[in-house]
Length: 436
Image 1 (cartoon, rainbow, N blue to C red):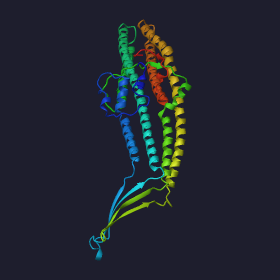
Image 2: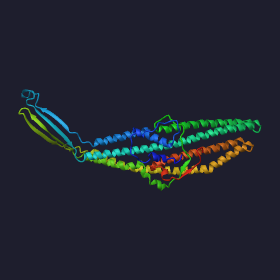
Image 3: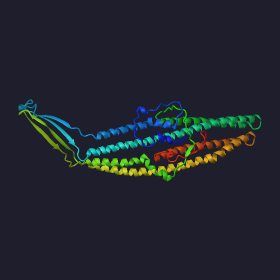
Image 4: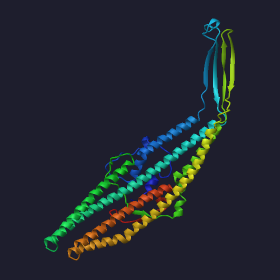
């Protein structure tokens, strides 16, 4: 799979503004039974992953809240009638007084601006949360795709082993008929073949699970593709530790904390602004029915904050700001630890893949071919053949597992540095063919 993770760059590994899932221009064609590529899988996941859709609604909710927080209080209309429908001279409305009054709340202390800033920062935090989830989905796709490629190759490997064992059984049968070996060797060969067929069924079942795990990333439990295209055997040179550590700031899990602290400070400022009382202006028109006169009514209302000065909410916001600062440091420490673990694992699996490919696998293959050929001429017994066969195919299985572990760790490391490794170091090492 040439440049395994470069599709992640093309599709949008770097932070990009949110676009609606419902936009017809961005919709892609439905799945089919055709082979799937990493690009197809990434596109499907970004467009249809249910978790990303849920985060998109949260983003819209935060946008709506920010809009609401910037609106001014509505004026109030008050109509009152006094001295009416009573007894004596106040019977009916001849002695009544009718007042029509408007009142408007005036927010003081910068409450509206502080509230608007807090909610705008909450909207920005929702953007970071969406970006974090988006990168989680990309990582999940990369890991699932690597495991699917491994399962495909492992299934093919086991199928080849079944065919090879069937051919070898024929060779044993010929030697038994020729009286060169005991009939017991044919029984052992059949048992070995039966065991390998069980392994083949297991590999096919694991392939089915791997195919389903990939399609679930875009919300489809039943995959509509048959084969995933790509070269699992490609590995890249690992840049230096310090080179990658400088890119940890691209991790949205860390980058979001700058906005988080700003938002917590804005909440504190908003609570402090509430300690300053608002003012309500009132003005209106009054009619006196007894004299048929008119007059104006106006006034001002200011609450006296003797007891409640919002001191509890202010203290709560201050403590939450301190908590956010501590959480930032904790997240930074855990990210650094995860980064070091992922880097060391990646270096280990790269070395393991190279060692198996260049040193162990060639020797195991040579021994297997030589012993199998020697069996025809009676140079080796059946146990030697079966032992070399087991060693050779276990080595190839270990090789596939190491490749899958390498790509899984690579995906984790790229998630931590916030960008694909291929964009930093385009050099790659081909570790054999598709069927290795």
